[in-house]
Length: 70
Image (cartoon, rainbow, N blue to C red; front, side, top):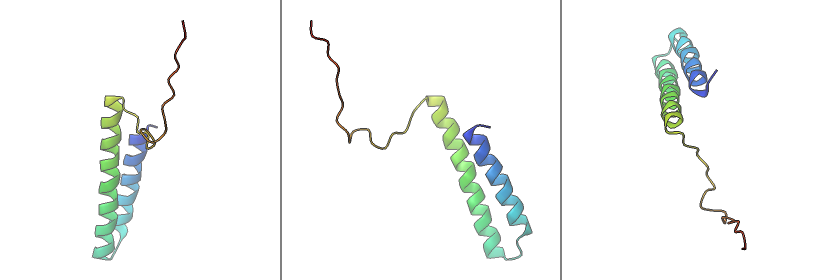
C-alpha cells in the first residue's frame, strides 16, 4: 500500500467515525480530519510524480565536495 493509499484509507475510516457521531460539532471535526487526509494523499501523489524528496536539513549542513586531484 502506497503512502497516498494509506492516507485515503485513514480518511475513509475517519468518515465512518464521523457518520456515527451524534454531535454535529464533533462530526464536523471528524470530517475536517478526513479532508486533511485526502489533501495529504493528493500532495503525496503530486510529489511522487515530480520525483521530489523533502529533506528538511538541505542547506543547513555543509556540502562535502569530493574532488579528484590530478
